[in-house]
Image (cartoon, rainbow over the protein chains, first blue to last red):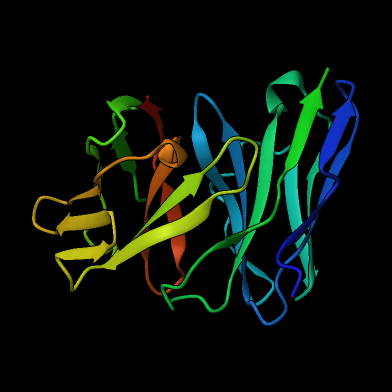
Length: 115
Length: 112
């Protein structure tokens, strides 16, 4: 398996533009997490899904952020409109089964820069 | 919800000495405590974990301890080496949904 796959690796955009980050979890994993990493705040949990259903989105900063998981092999995180303070590394991660206390597998991350 | 505090934010130790990173958590229902290591420009990767029914776990130079009563858990690295330089994150997870909350990280520098 290729692991958790994220795209793009780097995204540079201008303030006000829409940004879409993509994630493909490991095949057979039924839980997917989106995290945002900054120097000041570390790894923040934005939202997570179990069996494609959003369980907790309390970490989503504001209405400009939205996430979907239309099927077991694909998820998106969208920011519209983007702002400079959204600049961060966004990680997607998956785990085989919720409640299993197993290893969380991270993707390579998307480095987002909003100018 | 769960809150994980991690200290120190930065730690410098001489090569060969030991390093200790400490975390506290707020939700007494948390039952799984993994530690992740992130090298510069890389993704976080699991290095060791401990479950709430265990007080201590060791894997070569790395050990974790858990005090459920005090809601403390710690990472101990002995005989530190240059390749131990990285950012280390503690985390806490609560069943049944495995909501995994991370501390803010500790940047560990191993000095030659």
